[in-house]
Length: 315
Image (cartoon, rainbow, N blue to C red; front, side):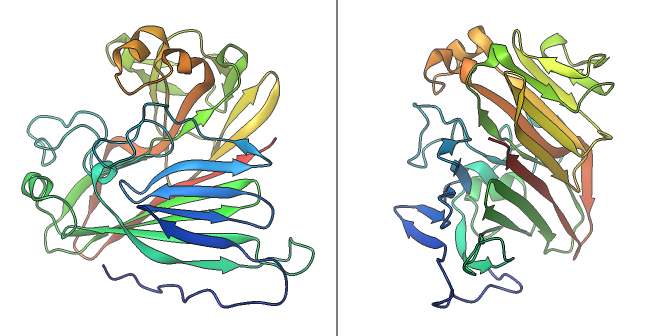
């Protein structure tokens, strides 16, 4: 698919250490001289690994399907054009849960690097990777279920101790369409019983565990003591933080997105998910998912929407 401002190929530099990028077996792997790295599966454009300071920041099920047969359980799946089960009577109603982006094969559009002077010898200190998906690339079944002309450009930028993921949605056709989008990020934690989520206090949320009823969080921090499946909409603060054993570990900063989903399946739900392994893996993960899922985003012909996140490791 076409991409405006496609980055030129990286040119050799003698100024200092450079990022490494290579594609192999349906995935793209990038690393920085600092040791930070990221891996993206072309199936779903799913980020399956993000490492900084020798730590794996993302949780990936040991039973996750990485062969393109099923959406990946873990990492950062891309949800589009509908979040959750599609509502009856809506244009997305014939689509599967969470839409088709996470189960489509994306195109790798290329990479570019940038230098901001953070590295001592002038080496590049970030690498940007672009992936594309258009109406022509999705399955016949998905195109029949949702027949709009669209293009997605998903940009993954790796920096020292940070990862930015941005989804650009373009309406290429002559019909207006509605959509939802979400970045379903699974973060790895050492012990969920010692983990809290900050930045959601005093916020209303829809609790899917309690029959989608609306509540307001009255505590500054959210502790995970059972199954959690909450949709926080129109959040006032830009940053949601994961705190482990009293120490901030991950900051999630929303960019042009107002909503955040917090999810942990706990014991019973984890046991019921065939691709969730180990079954006690809920003790070592928490999903903080930024998106536009409260209602629908309307995109007129020729219009573009872009939103995403910057996640920062504090460890």
